[in-house]
Length: 139
Image 1 (cartoon, rainbow, N blue to C red):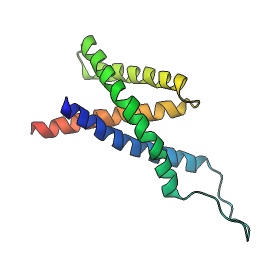
Image 2 (tube, rainbow, N blue to C red):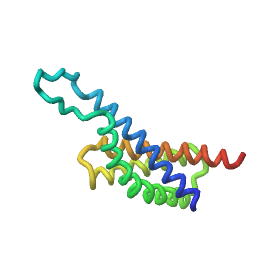
Image 3 (cartoon, one colour):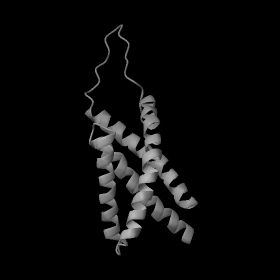
Image 4 (cartoon, helix red, strand yellow):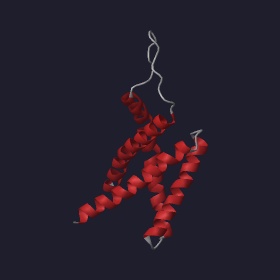
């Protein structure tokens, strides 16, 4: 239980960093090319670091409050189903995480994309950490 919680908390911080970078890159790509300010006009464009930190400020609590309980719930549902192959387990968990993202979208956010990107980022980082950390501990 403690190792599983440690993996999930580590996953929260890693996936929130990845989500922040992805969101920043997407916002940077969609933003029109910067126009140099006219003389005497103050440039109000936020610096890169402050934008990244603001995204982190909102992402980490949401990942902690929603990500950890939802991942435990999905893991317990998958143990009840008792799927045999890794592909079926992956696809079933992916379906459950997409359902969770849809529920989060309907209740919290107005942007459909903003609910799927962090959920799928969290899911794949969690898969990677579970595989990597359990393999390291077996050797």
